[in-house]
Length: 211
Image (cartoon, rainbow, N blue to C red; front, side, top):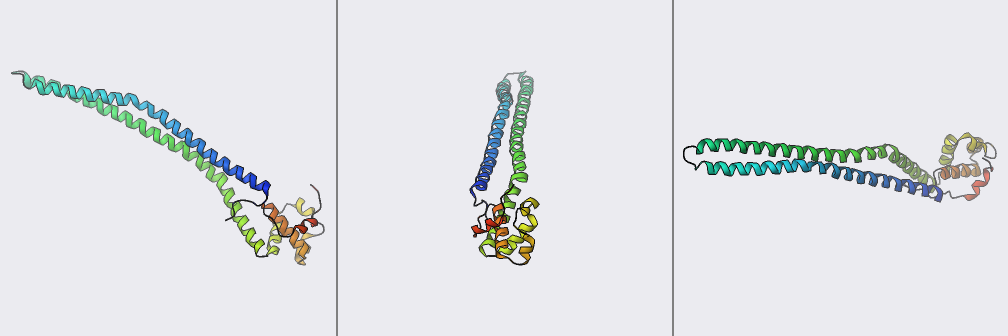
C-alpha cells in the first residue's frame, strides 16, 4: 500500500495530518489519565471509612473476647460488644463499596474519554487515508505497468470540467484515437491529482495555462 504521495506539497500535508492524528490521540489519553486520577482521589473518604470500620471492628472483637471472661455478666456484655463489632463491619463494607464505585467510575470515564475521540478519528481521518492509499497504489501499478490509457480514462471521468477545458483540443477524441500525447497528458494529470509523479514530463505541455 502506498500511504504517502511523491509530490512534496501533498506529502507534507499528509505527514502533518498524520502527526495531528497522533497528537489528537496522545492529548486525549493524557486527558483521560488525568481525569481518572482526579476521580480516583475521591475514593480516599471511602478508604478512610473502611479503615475506621476495620479498627472499630477489631476493637469490639477484642473487647468481646475479654468480656466473656467476666463472671456472671460476661456473656451479655460480650453480646453487646459483638453488635458493635457488626457495626464496624458495616462501616467496612460501606467504605469498600464507595471506593469500588469511585474506582469503576474513574475507569469508565477514562475509557470514554479515549474511545470517543479515537472513534471520531477512525470515522473521519482513517477512511480518507485508506481511500488514498488504495487509489494511489492502484494508480502506481497502472503507471509502472505502462497502462496509461486506463489512467487517462480515469482522468476523463473524474477531473472537473474546468480542468478538462484547459486541454488543447478534445481530450475525449484524442483518447479514442489513442493519441499518445493525449493519453500521456491525461495520465500525468491523473497521477498528479493523486500526488504521484508521471514518467513523461513533456505531457504537461498539452495543458494550457489557466485557472
